[in-house]
Image (cartoon, rainbow, N blue to C red; front, side, top):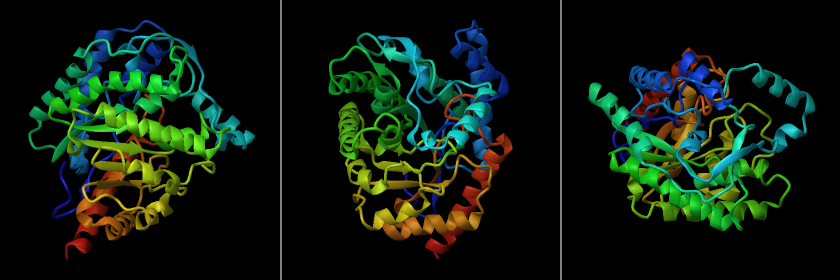
Length: 388
């Protein structure tokens, strides 16, 4: 994994806006309606080509396929895992529960959108969970690599993402395994197939683990903090086991409190989970750090020691607002982190993805890439200050 040896590198956390027609087909399929899979495949491949070009135009150093061939950052696994069936609806979020008027407004806004739901119609684990066939992930990697070959030198490094066993354990309700530990173990073994496939194709692996912060105000909202901290420790241990055959310098771990514009006044304090997160095997930690609820937590890195072999990839763009951050603000944020952990161990990123579920977007598509351009310019400004 490259370091920022002479300037601050830039990246993002994975999902980028999908074409409207592709989103429509994903939404129809998610509702159980018949769709032409060949058309989804064609549109997905075209979307990968387009999104790679857009990242290049924005100046992104470490880019990906924009998750264009997936309908969400984890629900795509419904077709790749055994043992899933039925449906259920996720619990509401603690921060939204306390504001009924906001909850109504939030529900109305999303009810009118063509999207894949992040809360309803989710599958359950009703049998043994195993990875069915590695062809799907290998095909996805090959499509991305073909596009990279068409655009030589487009990225300093390419990456692809796969979900944490923890987000599956909480979003895919367990009705088969006798304990959470056994359920996590099965999920970790299944996801190990994807983790290793991505790395074997020469790509960096990003493990998306919003569960390591988000689940405090969803699954664990009515339980003590200690129970959630225990969950975080179990998930990190599961991730480490699943990476047994993967070099640590080929993996980064993304953690966030949920990619939505809401109060977030029930988010767990980063200080309570940071000491556990730094024990995860991935060399880099990608952490939400730009929005108004977490922008102050750069100071945590003056208290929690980042191990010498690890990199920090802080979010310097808020992915839930159409504000375009000023490059000078981006530069200030990057310099704060560089002062805490060192300039060569910082890579600029976004708080989360821009469309983690197809159609689940609140930002104008052009503004998304304008924000990325602003981040790139901010990284240039910070680099001039840090390497003068």
